[in-house]
Length: 334
Image (tube, rainbow, N blue to C red):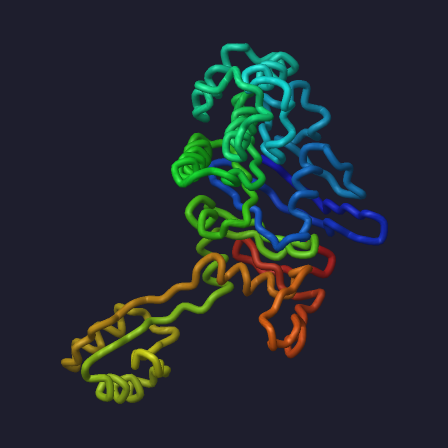
């Protein structure tokens, strides 16, 4: 388990990470999301003692990272695939890590095979493609067979087969009871991989909850209805006190707050044929954009559109932070 308590990092007058407190628990893939400049990379670096916090603490299974005698056996991380020594082969890069952490040399071959780099094990890593470099970084993270794994943009540069592989790898590691913490900007992939989400904006905690809860709290769900007896359907819904919005393009109706099963049964009882009865749920990307709308550091807008912040109200400093089924506020953190 990874535990953060009131973690803060300031660079001069700028607060990059602001009083962050959360836990990354074993047995699930925990996604770490936030706009550019939110403080994700700084937070992950502090977890590994690569940056010193201004205040607050990080514990890895109850210990500070610096107190781990053989850290690769406790926590493996991919933060920057380019950190490998370009003049060394893939094998020798991993062998140096293994020897410094008292890991058997036989493990090097095992992880190279696991990530699909056996055929290029003797080649210098400076000639690797971006995807191959990512695989080598993942191999380094897995080298000590740790119980905790951290990945920053792990699918960067990978082809579709590689993306599927890393998704299944992370799910498999979590299924073994390990702690898996992953940061990514690919919302579609995060939606398929993560079970739980930690979301930050401008260094502050915005959400700590399951994937399903996050989407539910930050999106609109509705049911779309279409019928050859559309006027009868509209009259029926009105008579039942159910508000419906007509879509001008398709002629379909949108209904909020009523289950699709209930609507289908209602139409059937009154002999109304339905050509469409489809629940519509927002994607993770839509929910994320809604949650972080006021936490984006660099806004872009279409030509002729009002600049960011014009006509919109900024989220107040004590706006609610959602997580674990409870509502807290940002004032004073969690």
